[in-house]
Length: 389
Image (cartoon, rainbow, N blue to C red; front, side, top):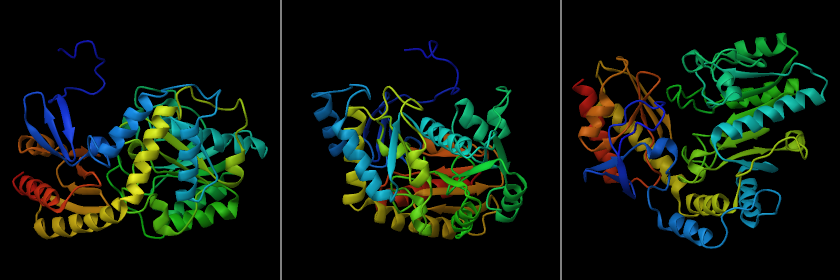
């Protein structure tokens, strides 16, 4: 079947994947691949997970959709579970990460308007990525993805990532700032890991100036960094946190969580979603969350992430093609000296799926269920390809 009917938004796609099991995928020609990308941080429990499959089929045979005009039992249970895990108060469910971030942006703007700030401004970071809608595109700190879609929206300013001093000066010189929106680890921007106390300093800055601290955990959430949410590593609570990707393990669902005044800002009629948190997505996501937490996958992600980092630093020691190796849990990046290196195609030839982001960073997002042998295979293939570039 030809791709001629599809808009050319993704460029050429070299394989048609037709089956998945655990950490393995197969294409329509019968070729097998080890998945070290998880559908871009989505399939944390791998492919065809029996608990996820069971949840989908159970709900599909009962009730798929009702709209949010009616109470949804699975949605209420999922909201309570996420509240328990996050320490935040309320949840709004959407279909994607971009929509979860849209909800966060609307909360920040309404928070500012309620305070009498008529041009509320959100600070986001250079190198960030928050989505492809017009608001989240404007929030994104990357001119490349914004080009061609001007005029962008007002109400956003960008500050350097991991630079609290510059951010502080920006906040103190702009009375319209109402919120700071940041990824705990920048994913699309190149797996950029900030200083260990970065989020703590942002929390203090927001408290001092009555700003909302909004964390985009679309990619870092759902156990990927070794905690359910990455902010737990810092022992803080944000005012707003967004997540999606791994929340549904492939079933499209996003969530915007909030606490305190941020949780009370939106009222009936201010926001909504036809499909957000419907019975199918909520029931499935609840099963996903329970498996991530109850089956020990967060501790495994932390341990295996350390193993990956140590192994790559040993195998690539002295390699002139490598600038840096970094990550948190199973969110890993190897920054190369060469942009647009052919590593993705070469890895695929050897039966491994990886990704290149920010031009020169090999991004590894293995499923949380990855075992030692699969980790060693990934390390061996990636290291050999980089050495032979």
